[in-house]
Image (cartoon, rainbow, N blue to C red; front, side, top):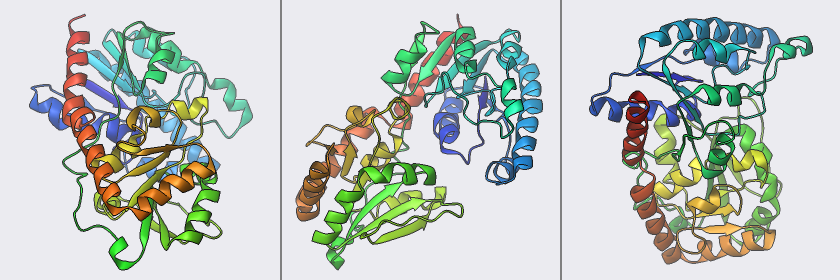
Length: 362
């Protein structure tokens, strides 16, 4: 069994859709090999660089490595391709894997159809890119695994054998804490965790509500992220930036009193798998989320979290949780129960193993 993740383990998409499954798949008796498009530490040095030449070297290195990956894939019974072959979608690359003769599975957790994950900096080189590569690759696969039903519907345009497997949570690592609350010290922590680009894009949706909440209550907005040199300010709101790492993620989320998950209701956002909402739920943190995309599948409004559209809804639902500690505990417990029962990595690993076995026998 060969896994070909788009990223190394340091990136959430591949860590959550590939790497966290590996111990469970090996425990089930599978022999597993993993080859990312580009390994660490080279990936991070190039990916986060602001140099166009560094990006060019990254694309060239990924291209050469993917030729090697295509050749090596001939030695495996099943090849699991996660999100894409290359960040740059070099035209024709999917045909190399189609000729390899292995049974292919394509996994996606974003709306990658009809788009390039990264664009070349030089316009003339963009002619080498194929935004339809994910669709062509899906047509060559024995199965497609989608992170939510919306992505599953898109995938069925290219392949009839589609499975919906939500991005799972390690519920043994992300657990509730009885002593996390800052409220006893007179301050409520509103928390958010994610990529810096997401914070800068989506926080405008809840900005007015957060300002009003900050005017009414002693609150702090804590962002668990990596800004990579960017700055983030929200006028009228006390903001604290905590540098994210895999090692501190669980303990920092436990320090939230209420989590927030603003999200736009557009085609790109509908392709998101709302994993961050699941992490809050796993840690027993009550969440207020935009009524958009997969948020609506993860949260039952008023039972294990709140969904909000307007500024008024955001203010009202955040206020209810801020003012009622018992409600926070009740919703957090219900959220934790749902995640353990439906979205744990142990449960989803069995589903992925079943798909791999089915493809291996096809």
